[in-house]
Structures are given as structure tokens and as C-alpha cells.
Length: 339
Ligand code: FA5
Image 1: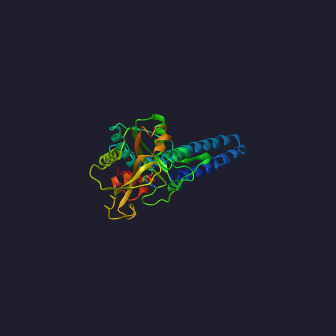
Image 2: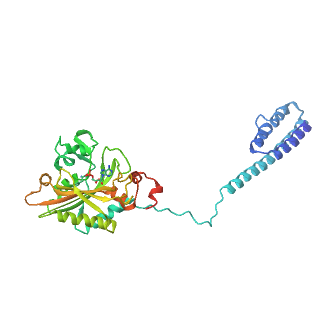
Image 3: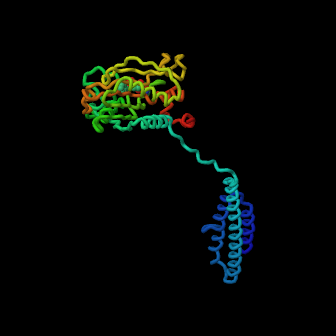
């Protein structure tokens, strides 16, 4: 029996040393050193030996077990060290390399231009007001001299909500809220997001930004209106821009105007942004209708005013020569990184 034990120990030592993978090594351990392994089988046969033989065979068995376990541990440690070495080589970091650095964000072009316009109007004594994006029908239409069944309600395709509410189609309702809250004399602007159920194309979004402006005082005239419009465009473009003024119909102003800007994307030649007309509608405006002053709690016999509704998103397109409005809300970093 001693001979068989020693033979098994010799063979197993060779297998342990030559094991190529941790799995192979483990298989040898289970086969020889495991609870049901070959050495355990020898242990079961001990009872059949004479006391003298048992002592000698027991010694041989223990010695085989001890040397095999030591060889197994050695090989296992070698596998573990090799795995660690491989991992360290893989995850090697050169601490002397310069770090990738923090990539700073930047203000969205809309925010930039809005900030610029706000500073400009603050310097002329205007306050900036905010209004709700979910509006009442009263503020979005009725108070602006657009009663139910008035055809002008169809000029702006409306997203209607429940309970007579809607997503505001323009920033003009803030005029009414401003008059109600602050009273005359009043100089206010109201930048904000508006919504229309419109088909999207290079110059139309369903969600876009406007910037409302209103001045109410005694003896406000078209001359005031033109002065502020010119100051606004001069401040934003920093140079003469070609504009045209034409009559425009909005129930909340009388007279009403459309101030168009020559398309800067194509220089007036015609492109998808200006629908090949060479002009972009940018700045509708006019003198505030007496009914609107009344809705805001102001006596139209005492006060007058002008108002405008700048297409802020389109202004940004003109300023940065953006050829498709959809870039602005795309969230595309390739676009945003340019600002
Ligand atoms: C109005 O919304 C009026 N509330 C403006 C106004 C205010 C007139 C005060 C008089 C006095 P309009 O629907 O034309 O008007 O829109 C104003 C501007 O918003 C347009 O000139 C245009 O520059 C911009 N705009 C209109 N529709 C879109 C759209 N779908 N996408 C992007 N910009 C648009």
C-alpha cells in the first residue's frame, strides 16, 4: 500500500506542477485531495491493515498529503500572482500624463441673446417679468381683444388643455398680467417659451421663444416705438441691419406693424429659412389697443402704449447665421460647442 501511495503522490506532484490553468489545478485537487479523492480512499482501507502496517501506511499517507497540499498551494499562489500581474499590466496608468481636464459648458445661444436684450432694456428702465406657460384663455385671447369666435384665434394654432387652459401661444398675455400687477406708467419685457401646434420646418418650431415688450405712459407714440425697435436691433447686431416695416394685423394693437429683417443667412438672396423671400418676420409691434389697456385696468383716455413681440429664436438664427431652427432645441453637442 505504501508503494501505491508513494506512486500516486509522485504522479500527482507532476500533474500539479504542470497544471496549465487554475481550473486544471482545481480538478487535480478534487480528484486526489478532495473528500472523496484518491487519498481519502486509501484512508478508508487503513482499517484492514495490521497495527504495524497501519502506522507505516498512515505516515506515508500523511506525508503524501502534506507535500501535495504544499505543492497545490504553491501552484495556486503562482496562478494568483500571474493573474494579478496581468491585471496590473492591463490597468496601468501613467500618472505623469496630463489629465483630460474638465470640459466647461457654455450658455445656450438663446440664453446669451436673452441676457443681452435684458441688459439693454434694464439700462432703459424696463423690468423683466415672467408669466405662466400654462395660461388661461382669458389672458391669452380675451384680454388681448380676441373674443371667442374671433377669426384671429385661428392665426395661432393652439394646444388646448382641460378646463379652459392652454399652452400660451405667445408672450403677449404677460402684457395683461404686467398691467394688472404694476399699473401705469409701465416699462416691461417678458422673455419666454411659447407653443403652437405647427408643422416644423427650417424656420418654424412648435416650441420657441419670444420676448414681449411693453411701454405704457402718457403720450406714447409711434416715434417711441420706432426708437426702441431701432435701439434693440442696433444693440443686438452692433451694425445697421436692413429692415422693412409693413402694416400688420393683431387685434391687440392699433395700428399694428410687422417689422421684417433682411435674411442674414442668405443675405436676402432667398433660402429655406426665409422661405425664399429674402425677408424674415421678426418683430411685430404696434400701439396698444384701448381694449387691452382696459383689460389691464388702465384708463385708455389717460394712457397710451406700444408693445412688441420679438421672435427671439429667429433673432438668434439671424445673429449666428443658423440655417435651421431645429438645431436650437436639438441638444446636439456638436452644435452647442460652437458657442
Ligand atoms: C405674435 O405672437 C404677437 N403676440 C406679437 C405681437 C406682440 C404683436 C405685441 C404686436 C404687439 P406672431 O404670431 O407674428 O405674433 O409671432 C411673433 C414672432 O414670433 C414672429 O415674427 C416670428 O419671429 C416668431 N414666430 C412665430 N411663429 C414661429 C414659429 N413657429 N417658430 C419660430 N418662431 C416663430
